Image 1: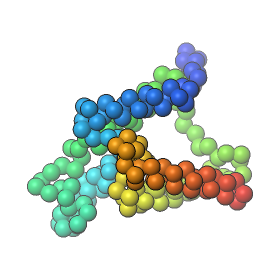
Image 2: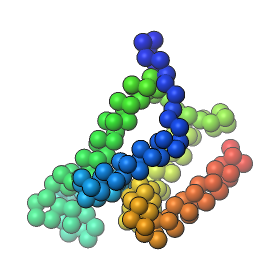
Image 3: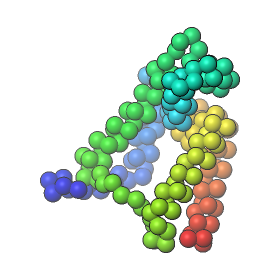
Length: 174
């Protein structure tokens, strides 16, 4: 962190929650969709697949619809949203004096290499699960509950219970 940019405190959780709720409302009003993220990675996979094996992607039951009628899978609201979130997060971290490249390893019981492997494995499993559930935490959880969908509430309850259980398990293992 630079000397000219002092570290600012994090927002209080209630304030952050209210702002997230307002952003969610604005996305419904302005774009006609809630928030989401995991669909971006499916669209990137479809785009990449079109570069290396177009006939396989076009005939794929899942990815084919993203490229039907010569559509560019990257020209979609969810891709623009995720790019905007990444840019906004970077600007916010730099502006708050909190931008730093590092690998968190908790209490130091695991190596950075193990931490990266576990993070990759967890990310792959979360991505697979989000595709099975037809949405990720933000899509199913936030947008689903905002629409008062039962699936959104069930997802968030299960998400937190499993997260707390895994956290407790990981503390015992490592």
